[in-house]
Amino acid sequence: MRQLFLIDPIERIRPRKDSSAALMQAAQALGDEVWFAEPRALSARQGAVAVEARQARLAEIRPHDPAESPLPEPWWRATPPQRQSLGHFDVVWMRKDPPVNDDYLFAACLLKRAVEEGVRVVNAPEALLSWNEKLSALRFSTLMAPSIVSADCETLSHFIAEVGDAVLKPLAGRAGQGVLRVSSRGPGIRPLLELVTDQGRQLLLCQAFLPQVSNGDKRILLLDGEPCGAVNRRPRPGEFRSNLAQGGQAEPTALSEDDLRICAVLKEPLRQAGLFFVGIDVIGSHLSEINVTSPTGIREVERLSGEPVALRVQERLRSG
Image (cartoon, rainbow, N blue to C red; front, side, top):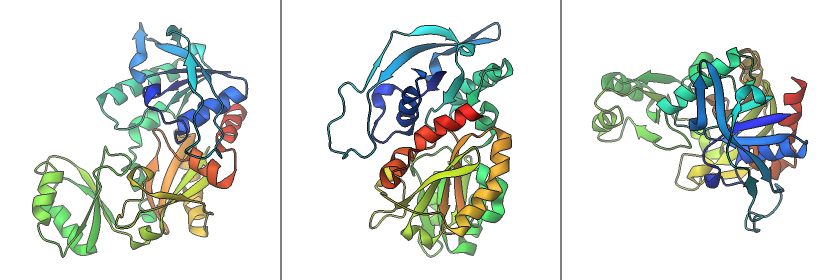
């Protein structure tokens, strides 16, 4: 098989932590050609979508190597860029990290056009365009903590007064960036809401704060709708954000009955939407987010559990 990975600049990837690097290495281990490009390398002429891509050769990185052990140098080599039709590839992975800005949306539109021409894209561009990582969980609102989406400061203030303690999330955010915790008992809520909504012009997600987050926020990886691994992310002392990028500590974990119930509810909607590889966030018994753009966590799950998650993803890709 030939696989193309649309990713952020490869020079910025941290291969011991990066899920895209894990998926690329697993594809290579199975004998596939691995190509990569940034989404801005896509183009279209007369409706035919092409890309300026490079074929990669990746060094082996074992998930159980200590974090401080030296990386192979270089860990990747690549050919010069070559123009290829997207039809040249058996699978195209869209693994660009958020934010989902105009450039991301335009690239997804080009990929949607490629799908119409028979190209297999993971995850489905139609779903990338419609399943916002903060808003898509609202499709399953009964699984969530009390939540509201609004730009109106008065509406948000009333909601915070109802729940007492809340979390504010920018809709285009990632890795915990810009997430704030507010209390109805704290001073200055209205000016803060005016700031984060840009004077009522910017929608945001406001959710009841879940104290269970002190025990961790569970990242569950779903492969074709079914759980294939999980890791618990415990906030560092004095912090409520559990994201690894914010200093959260990865811990081994098992799926609870609540986790399995949430996964069962999501399974068919995710499959029908073409969301092949997804990462959901669960706090206690509540669904928090559905991550569809470039779900992370593969390296952590492999390191803590010994399960070859990336290889299983690639094997399932072949069976589907």
